[in-house]
Length: 185
Image (cartoon, rainbow, N blue to C red; front, side):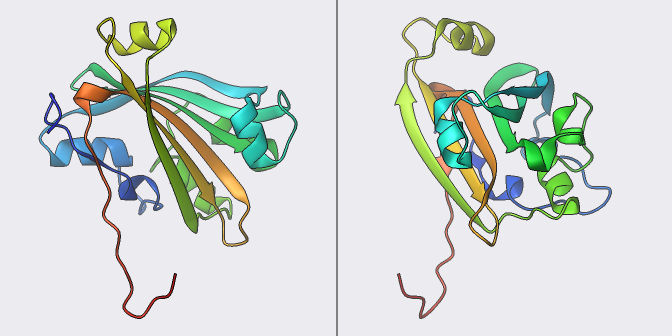
C-alpha cells in the first residue's frame, strides 16, 4: 500500500458522466472518505511536446490545446497532469479555458462527438524535475511515477493525451481488466 493509503483506478476517468454527476476525481476521493479537488494552472493553446506531437501526427511545437492541473487530495498535491487535445477538437471549447467543466473533460468530449474507444497507458518511474518537485512537495531523491494515457476514438484517431506525474510513495495504481469469454488476442 502507498504511504497515503491511496489507490487510484483509471476507469472512472474514461467514461462520460451522467448529467448532474460531479467530476470523476471528486467522486472517487469522496468514495474513499477523502476530499479531491484540482486547480487549473494553465489552459489554452501551446506548442506540442515531441511525444504528444507524435501521437497526434503533428510537428513538434505545432499548436495543441493543453490543460495543466494540480490535483489535490485533502488539499495536498497528489498529481500534476497535463492533458492535450488536437486544436480541431478543442479550440474554442471549454477544454481551452480555465473554467470547471461539468462532469469533466471526457463528458464534454462526448458531447462534442468524440468518445474514447481504446485507451493505452504507459507507466514509468523517474526523478522529478525541479518544478515538479516543488509543485508536488516531494522530498529530495523521492521518485515520481509518470503515467501517459492516450485515448483513441472508434476510428483509431487520438482525441486526448494525458501526461501525469505523481509522487511514487503516495500512489498505488490498480488496473482491473475484464476478459471476454472466447475473445482472441
